[in-house]
Image (cartoon, rainbow, N blue to C red; front, side, top):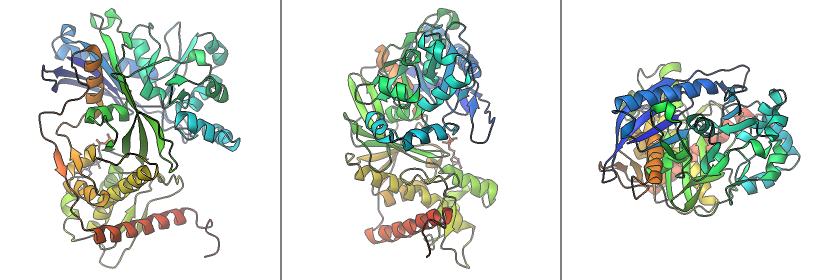
Length: 501
Ligand code: ADP
């Protein structure tokens, strides 16, 4: 068995996967603990790293017990919320501050200053990332400033920095290993994508002592060995990847032209672009796909801020649904969208628009527009936003998409998935087992420790597949309507920007 740890933004989970001789992964035990969110100021989001560690230990112990004891396990795999930044004391093993979470915007001014000073092109060329508070480097610098004496102590290795994977590896090994995996390191703005090494010049630029950073290893490497006191026996930690990259591995999107999109609250597209980093000119992010089995593959990534959350809003805000699942039948009471489009910019628009000030916008209402139109427009917006990301991929010269692998709560909606296939002109494939993030971590660990000879083999259960069947003219008409709606949303957010109309 493999013990997979899935440390997410809102909860910490452990899952025991039984691995059959044929390479099938069967989840046999799960344990989950919710994680407290702290919002000390507007735009700030923090987690207690000590709480994360306690929850990890507790869920792991529970799963080991439920699955029949530590003797049944071959290795540990880790996947985690990315970018979230932890600072801790190497001697005491205690966090020196609450962790700064990926959503946190407190370093917007700092990254803005670096951009204004002209550093963005160099940072993007080296790391694939734009200058944004999202990534760890500016969060590390903030933490080093906030904890008295920390920067100086960090140069002596007395204070350590890391993303959640590094923090958990350090705790699991009883402080023996300060190690991260390349997919997590790629989200810091400090790692050179081409060499998978920290860049001293970027560390200097952000003010982060390189001595405080973990050693970078591949996703399937031996990352450390658990302290025998924790589970009664030492286990090798043999797999780690950030959540979106773990999902990519879980889906088996291991070759150029493979891509996955996770439709949850938001939606995250990761497209495998092959063995060389691709520099985006259409505001996607360049990052790692995975590094395992001697292969290093890169990816382009784009995020949609509001996907399932638009359905939540229809349910909880507008109250036109009592359950998300009703959205499918209600949308299908209409023969088409009636010219109504919803741009779900509730928290701004992500890639490729990057319009943080945009807001949700509905266009095309007529006197007979009703709840069904709103629901249909919300579901259709998933497909249009996906199309925008795929168009950006194409513009960046990414290899042609073979198919789109999907997971997440919204993929239960067959109407929405068919519409994605139609609008994006791509085959959409939903695997029967949905926990792709934990599955990816488990597959990396099983492969790393030698339990399986392939990183991925197709699951026994057939996936659900949707193929494009919409005519070209209809697709073109719908996309034209969508682009008009996006324009309206952007103009509404900055009514003065266009000058006198
Ligand atoms: P997360 O991991 O981001 O919490 P999930 O993958 O659990 O998200 O997906 C939950 C989201 O899926 C919710 O926003 C919910 O509105 C949406 N959702 C769930 N079922 C359906 C459905 N049948 N049709 C449309 N949306 C759905």
